[in-house]
Image (tube, rainbow, N blue to C red; front, side, top):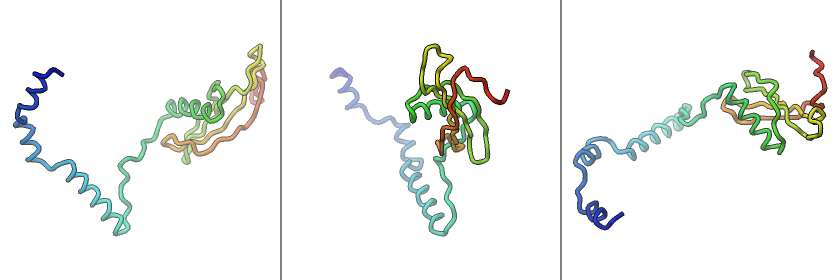
Length: 142
């Protein structure tokens, strides 16, 4: 910033409209204090307070992307595909196929199916490896 611009900023008075809006309305600090008082009063009488920052539920497409990323990160393996995704009352049930061992030719890669449960907000609740198979193996359910 040039010295002229800095000098102009220092000598210029406050914007009258900004000063008016600050003095006319309640400050954000007052608003936050009011919210805190309301929350504490609910806690004092035993009523459940609302949770303003609770994460919103996520959809199937988002949970698929999230599941591939989470399980790859946890296991250090490359995600191959998601073979199932089901929305249940207790959360999202997702099966992710991860490549456990790459081979040549790729049809002989060792794949592991991991079943995972995610809460409705996308938090990983549990996972386990359900089976291992070669990529070229045919599924039993054909």
